[in-house]
Length: 154
Ligand SMILES: [Zn+2]
Ligand SMILES: [Zn+2]
Image (tube, rainbow, N blue to C red; front, side, top):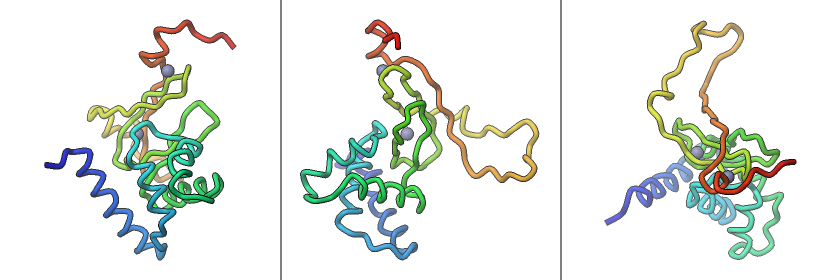
């Protein structure tokens, strides 16, 4: 029997196929491999981490290509780029509304699923000259791994 993670992963691969097709993009081996690498991780990898995962399998693929493909995924809506205090972009194949916990010491990003945060509306209601499409809340703090270590003073 398939577990939930496997099932949602299969769904995502189907979604990728459909969305690529409707955007007139060929689902190349590169795109598929990069998506697989992203969707199989839940730690919101950076371009470098995705590149490390696939560089063995896809010889000759460059970091720039990985970055470009990830940006394409964001623009067609099968992945999101998450905001975090680091300068490095991190990517997420989970595009359903959820929130994040970011460790300011190691940069780790964890998912936070909390229905009480899912239906927030600005007090003003509609903001003039701006249509809100989506949102995601990032809590910053210290992860359990870093809590045990003394804080790095910069
Ligand atoms: Zn940490
Ligand atoms: Zn996430």
